[in-house]
Length: 346
Image (cartoon, rainbow, N blue to C red; front, side, top):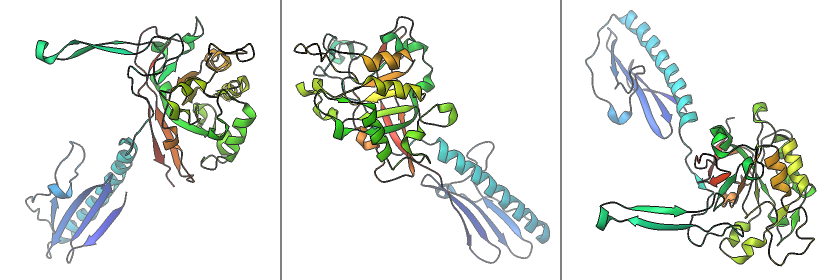
């Protein structure tokens, strides 16, 4: 927001304000020795006199004594500027982000699912030529495509999807780049994650990325998204051979009050395959057991996480919306996830 005072003629002035690429202005023309005041404005709300420069229309001029007119002129202009300032702050914080980043895979008949889960299907049951409208039936599992795991997924007494407050699904996020550690069927341990967090120079927190994690009530970030780059193999057999994370990763994150962990792979745990031996099946659901057991949420099959990374910029925050369908009693559900970056005020 900026204000501009521009002289027009003797005693004339105009104040303008730029709010999200729209120009707002309040114009007063004070002419002659009697100091006539002409406000050119349009009322955009019952409480605020505001006009856009492309909507200015002339109003009848108000005559008043010179001295009183100057006093009124200054009072009104100061009031308008104050209103403009308050309004500009409101608009800058309430307007939606300029660029949204889609973090979800589309659901199609070719959407990969965890072995044993039902595939996604969609069938038309009503058509426009026959019925005058179109309706489809959808068949899918609660963990199909980009989705969230609720605690009930692994724990009988865990929270179900409809029991989770809406604010749990939206907030600031930290994207951790672990692509250099992502190997087929490889395990990423906590020491590896710590090293990645230590190299992150884009975090605005004074103590770095690791210090920025914690409870939301303390002003910290409680959403961690691991960027493995494995979404590149979406739809191919290699997608099932994704990297996984060790139990200590879940324990450390949960211990820091992280409440959401997401990954751009089929699962943060190793996906069991038919050919797996005893060693491959060791501790198969460590991340799920620890995180869901602590009341955390897990997001799987995310994509485009790299677009959220603030490359070389410490003046931006990452925000995400990971809201699922509100399915009563569900252990999870599909998500249309998206994110955006916000510039920090200086």
